[in-house]
Image 1 (cartoon, rainbow, N blue to C red):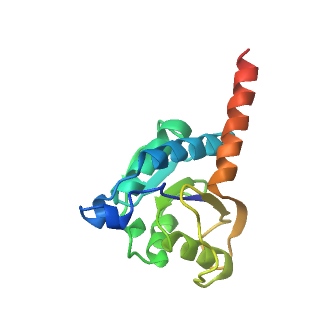
Image 2: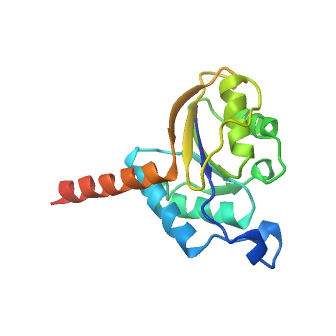
Image 3: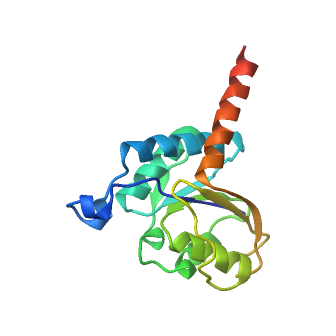
Length: 177
């Protein structure tokens, strides 16, 4: 199994938002950056079979934008296990129910995603693995998911994904000529 974790894009600041935390949306800049990062994921030839997202608006909208570029035929599934306040072990349990050959793309929040990565790679939750907004990490799982038994495949901050997306687009444009 491959587990690709993506942090939601840039959202409206908390002190500028009058609605509930769950409904805080992406900014226009956040949407643009997510599309660019998604182009980078596409250039990496990611082929998700499952797309799970936090039900919070900023994460759900990020998942929809990524889906449009990376995996338009895959259904977006909201999961409380990715919401703010969830525990990484809850998502691990969900991942264990999926096929061993699944490629799962999960969109969520910090510090949850970083804690999940540290749990999968190191066997315990550490604060040293923060994921930037619209950044992504891919963790490879051999067999059943076990804390500390997974392997880091790649880790890209959003700026590198955007660069990959530009290169991938240029390559595709050349191939179409």
